[in-house]
Amino acid sequence: MGTTKSDLFNKKQNETASLLKAIAHPARIAIVEYLMNVESCICGDIVNKLPLAQPTVSQHLKELKSAGIIQGSIEGNTICYCLNEKTIQKLKVYFETIENKISKQNKCC
Amino acid sequence: MGTTKSDLFNKKQNETASLLKAIAHPARIAIVEYLMNVESCICGDIVNKLPLAQPTVSQHLKELKSAGIIQGSIEGNTICYCLNEKTIQKLKVYFETIENKISKQNKCC
DNA sequence: TTTGTATATTGCAATATTACGATAAATATT
DNA sequence: AATATTTATCGTAATATTGCAATATACAAA
Image (cartoon, rainbow over all chains, first blue to last red; front, top):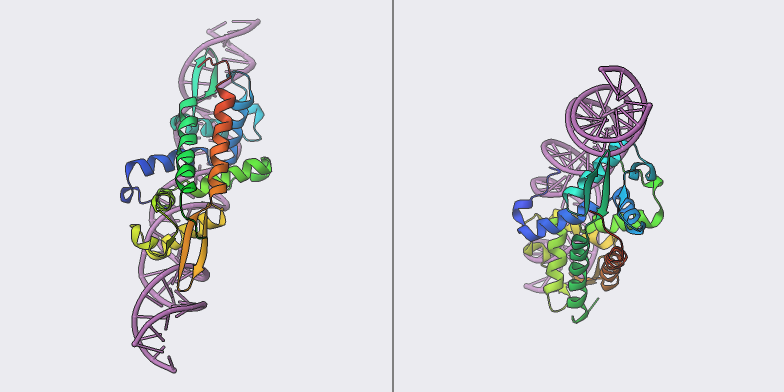
């Protein structure tokens, strides 16, 4: 095993899990928080901001990109990265919805 | 490897990553969404709602519990589970903060 | 006390993830 | 063209995660 039985859950549940999994790593959190704190998009040099080797950072950036969390546009020799606001908003709304639902529940624990 | 180099990132980044990782699985998403849609807390029978074997569900519940996403109180023979509102709120606020910061940025991609 | 029911733990096999050296590809500079 | 710079890909070693059968534990009911 080690294999998640995705076929047993619905499409949306699998998508939500994938999206969350894409951010759920300290290096990828660090990338997201770095991009959030920079005034604008950042061209290149994310590699130098992280304490990991270049291929490792490249791999993390690829994961964030393919999950739609960040966007990257080629800028000559370097690549300009920024956060995808829509995806971040989707995640916020997801937890906001849960919060609103449970705040109306009768709690017992 | 396969080992995340947690020591290279700060405490908060590691905590955020762990929390997100704890929900980032279809089965655990399904558990969270089930608890969210139930009027009150649910005693037992989460196992029967999921298409996985009992030990597997128990393991997922343990992960959610130790991450603080759900709470469980023993109710005689069964256990009464419910979502931890504070943790869900923390996650909402996390993405809300990112959203607010990036909405003020000068985008270029 | 015996039996039944609900949940947890252990142990293990299979797959997934993380990290990085080596190398490739693509553009920039000289 | 030759060299430098930036990012991507490949291959691989090490660890982590997932899932479940078997079994244990804990309480309830008979």
